[in-house]
Length: 221
Image 1 (cartoon, rainbow, N blue to C red):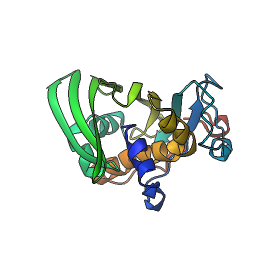
Image 2 (cartoon, rainbow, N blue to C red):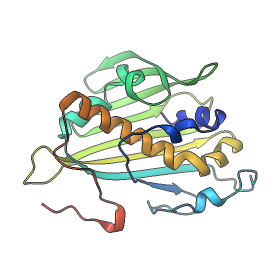
Image 3 (cartoon, rainbow, N blue to C red):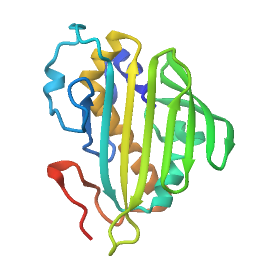
Image 4 (cartoon, rainbow, N blue to C red):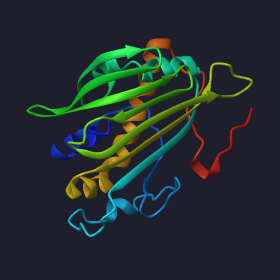
C-alpha cells in the first residue's frame, strides 16, 4: 500500500483534491526519532534536492478511537481482494492464496500509464491484527503495514481502538526524500479510506473518530 506514494509523487500529488475521513497520525523519520512524535510541517520545509541523509527508513503511526467494532474493522482491512474498489490509487488487488490466518496478494498502484506492482504477504489474527509485508524488493528495501484492533469504550460496545503503522525504506534516495514531504498526508488518506469503507458497509459510526495521540489524549470509558 505504501507504493501509492511513489506514483502519487510522479503525478504531482493530486490526492490533495480528495475528501476522506481525516485521521491525524504521526509521521516519523526513524533516523531522528525512534518514537511516534509529530513533526508538524518541519518535514515539508526541507528541500527534496538534499540527499545527504543516508537513512531512508520512514515510519507513520496512528492511534484512533472509532465508532465501529473490532470485527467490522478487521473485515474491511483484511478484504484485500476489494482494495481496488475503495483504496485511493489501487488499480488492482488480487488474492493469490488464502487461509484463515494468512494470504498472499498482488497489488497494482498508480495512474495510467504509470503503474507499479508488488506482492504482499498478509498475516491475519481475527479480529485483532492484520500485518502486511512486502515480498519483493524492486521498490523497497523493506515495507511493513500493521493494523491492531483492541476494545474501545466500555459504555459503547460498537467502538474500538485502531492502531495503524507503516514502516518502510525506499531503495531510491529520490523517493525517500520526496516521502519526507508528502507521505504523512498520503498515509492519513489511506486510514481515512478504510474508515469510510467500514461506514459504507456497516452504517454510520456511533461516534466521531478520536485521535488518541493528539495531546496525549487518553482512552476513558
